[in-house]
Image (cartoon, rainbow, N blue to C red; front, side, top):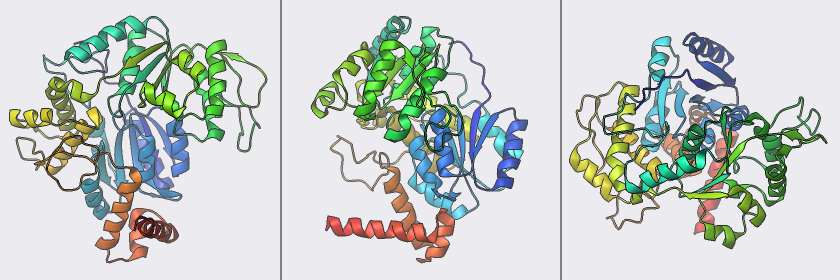
Amino acid sequence: MDKREVALARVLLVDDDTAFLEATADLLGLLGHSVQTAASVAEAREKLAKGHFDRVFLDLMLPDGSGFHLLDHVDTERTRVTIITGHPAVKAQVMNLYGLNVNYLIKPLSLDQLQPLFEPAAAEADDDTALHFGELIGETPVMRDLYDIIERVAGTGANVMLLGESGVGKEMVARAIHNASGRSGPFLATNCGAFSSELIGSELFGHEKGAFTGALARRSGLFEEASGGTLFLDEITEMPLGLQTNLLRVLETRTVTPVGSTTAIAVDARVISATNRSEEELVEHRCMREDLYYRLAVFPLQVPALRERTDDIPLLVRWFLRGLNRENGTHFSVNDADLARLADYDWPGNVRELRHIVHRACIMTKTDAGELRFPERFGSPFSRSKQPEAAPTLVGRTIEDVERQLILETLSLYDNNKTRAAEVLGVSVKTLYNRLGAYEADNERSN
């Protein structure tokens, strides 16, 4: 495998403490990284929607809500998240709740704390581990077939629609196609389900100054910014049907007309889209126009589920573990018996769930232990396995579910002192009462 240079990172720093923002941004700048800052959930969401960040530093106590809500907008398979908190109690609570690619730092931060976080996430691969197209790991027949298809389609310029379950790594396959294509422009990714119907047109096609309230300057859209490269439209079936007509026209004419403009702009972005819906569901639920489907799915490509390539699990586990060891300064290994157990599980959450399990095991294993310690049972609410009932697991749960448990456990920790719990959680007391009222209403409806 060719050795790859470690690139300097694009960092998003989210905190409403101006002094902390400036000081930490200066430290990250000394390390040579590119830093953008945000002081609220809304501002951070906007910046996350515009482009990819390699690392997000996230404060919990933001003026317009809990920083945890931003995790819905972060692809934790590709972006490492560091939660920054001044409250060690929250750190302990969150470590028990989250299996995401998230770690934690306690304020204040120093250069010595920050620098190790940006060392390579993975050491050089073992001799039997190849990183195909700079993105993909696996040597099973289904993956070999996938690599062959990527090589065939990459240079054609045809629009590709990736089909596959959540967590199989569709964005990584899209990046692999881009890497193999030789296109000189950037790879830009966006989630079509993350925008309101009012904003998605502006995000994709751009807008002119004054086009709508808040449009204070001209802004180019993702199609224009990705010209010469690749635009990845994830969750394409979540795009409002009314806007699908506009997207179809862009694909047909290879031009975009920004919101508030009458002038078309030529674009040359190769489009790769993705959905976790099957082709049968596309027809049954009528979530995509037929003419748009044929434009986007010039080449439909099924990404295999992890249970279809269980022989790749040892390679993936060792790759994930190598990266986590490097990031956290640990030296864990994994034994053959545990690898066999991992291979026997059906992985309804696919590669994403596998990585979460490895990460959680790293958190729960004592740092001086030699071997990684996995739980006695694996499981998620979506598992097809007929395993004995296990303790509740949070893998696969929504941010709202996890936040609810965090709120209730924090209240318990502080003897139901709502003022103190709200301060620790980073929300107003009014917001906390609203959330508790919503939980009570949900319980009444379910009874």
